[in-house]
Structure formats: structure tokens, C-alpha cells
Length: 205
Image 1: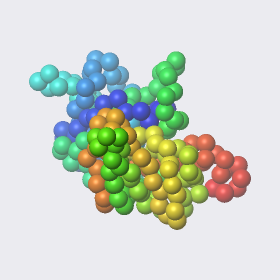
Image 2: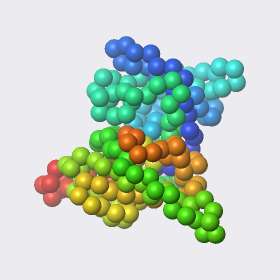
Image 3: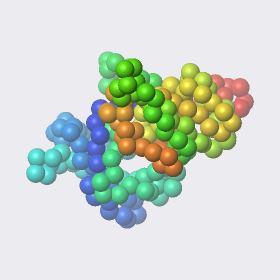
Image 4: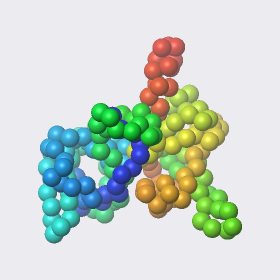
């Protein structure tokens, strides 16, 4: 379980295809503090650490992804140098400052537009992102509800047809990969956990 609050921006340093694809990811996390078998959310998907180490003072860990995972997420497009939002799994007693995030991806959403919003006094402001997602998931997305995009827990500002919008403040843009995102980029989408179970109880899913 995760919160959707990003604690590091890592980068893919190696991609090794095989029966399952191995990704090695650089991180500011201390490798000695990462257990083999631990779960880390990597731009959304919850992945299992299978190896770790330090190379020239830079910590790294490795994960594997199946063909199924590659086909249903953005992982199939990860390359050497791809920046990733990282979050380690919650521990009992940790502050739940974001939302309830499982790391199970429902679909890939596409950025339709990214529009800067001027800050007070003309300084750097927030950015309004509009996303398009499969129509089947739109009943789970509501204004002022939560959505998880590339592992970041965000509040929905607007919903129109098969599109929804969120706003990222400068702090979030600097501490996640969204500061470099633009129109046509694909992101991993996880719908709100509570919305999922409410829909199930109502026979809608």
C-alpha cells in the first residue's frame, strides 16, 4: 500500500529484455535499507525489488515486469534515462498524507494539454493538465475525487465526457516527473480505491 506522495525521482539505468524484462533504476534511497522482495511504486506500478547495489556512489535497485505488465502500463516504453516517480511502501504508523494507493494500474491515460497558470505577482504558477482515458473508467472519476497518475495522488478538478483535469502546484511539479510532461505523453492511471468498491457494491463493475 502507498499514499501517492513521491519521495524520489529515479532513472532507468538499464533495460534487459527476457522472459520478464529487468529494469535497473538509480535512486537516492539507501540500498542497505531496501530489502530484497520489498515493494516500490515506480511511476505507479507496484514492483518487487529483486536486486540492489551501489555503483560509483550511486544507489540502484532492480525489478522485473511481465509481458502482461508491459502491455497494460507505460513500462514498455521505458528506456535508459527515463525518469520515474518513486515511493516506498507504507509502514505501520506512517502518516497517510495522500490517498489509498495500491500500485495496480487500471489503464494508460494520455495528456491532452498542459496549460501554465500564472502565479501571484507574475511568478511561476501551477499547471492545469487535461487527460483522456478509456470511457469505461470515467464513472470512477469524479470532481473533487482522487486519481493516481504515474504514482502521484491528485485531486480531480473537472470531468467532461472522456476527459478529466487536475492541477499541479509548483512544489508537485518540482518533486515529480510532471514538471517535464507535455501533451501526448502517456501516464499510468489508477482509479480511486473507494470508488472501485462502491461501484462493485452497486453492481456497476
